[in-house]
Length: 475
Image (cartoon, rainbow, N blue to C red; front, side):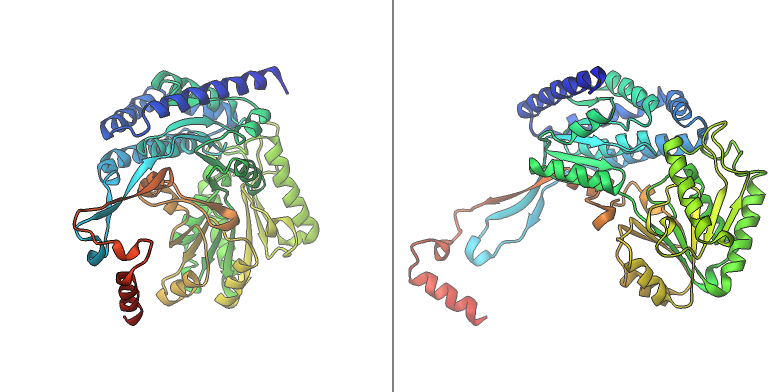
């Protein structure tokens, strides 16, 4: 272990203990306190906007400024405002009915109580959004927060550390930065809740470590998200929407398009529309400054291995749009389409997370549904169709974290729509009220009134219990 990580681990424990003590002193902050913490966030972001953009540029070597502003800045502000607008309602107790014959005027309700100290292991693809977005839900729910940014975006991590350090006391919110040893140690602490965003392999390791302390986890893990087009949906507008999402962050988005199901009779039309759209937008996709770099050589090599395996499997299946892949001026590659790849090769079995688009042709929707069922449940399913019966047929026979119609990934951009996966694509939800509840303990309360008559429930049982049971059994 490096000295830097050893020091970072020591710092983590110090902050963790301080937050534990602070939470014990004030385990259920009142609404004004929570609002005051959330109200600090807009100024924190506004004063560091340029640094956010520059940090992403530094880590990626080419990262469009508007992409940074939209997703790692404005997205966070929207979530924060939604929490401020709704926190009063979220904090209200939820009344539950009681059997009046037994409980009279007694009352029962759920009140959402803060969990305590929450850890957030965030991802490299949207480092600010994935760090600060869940933090908003956690603070709204009354918790303390420690964030560990991905070691793959060190410049972003340092900017986050400065932003949070200048805005919050360490026993309110803190950022710890370091390498893999710190990341691996992070999930061994006795958190009150732990969030991890990333790949399934590491997600499994995080969950296993957390389980040693019975720590509840929220896992956002991605997956192979399909787009399904029916025959009426292969149009220039729909292809543009699909492609515009796929090339955002150069495909490095957990809810992005992974592969497309296209009716066999429309495959050539789809490819033609895709080629024309790429040509209309870019002189050269590979070299364009409007296209985000692949993060680093590790990710680039992974993608090149997938392409080469597909090429070896069937050389004629590849359509490469742009100059050859290169790392000379940052990690770049052409937009690569793989037509009807063999089911056993990597592009068919692993998440793309880059500018590779497998296309699977089909004749019936049942083929598509069977194809989805052969894989683990995805984070999103995206269907383009004007036929409501077809849409409902696919929706009702599949399972995924989200399901969107005639768009891609936009369910994940809504501040008021719970976001998360199912099965191997994740567990738990954040965003909006679902996030508030995720990071709360739904504590059950019952206040017994003087007019309650609960004697039939009590031991030792008497004749009134016999009559009570006889009455219930006869109804």
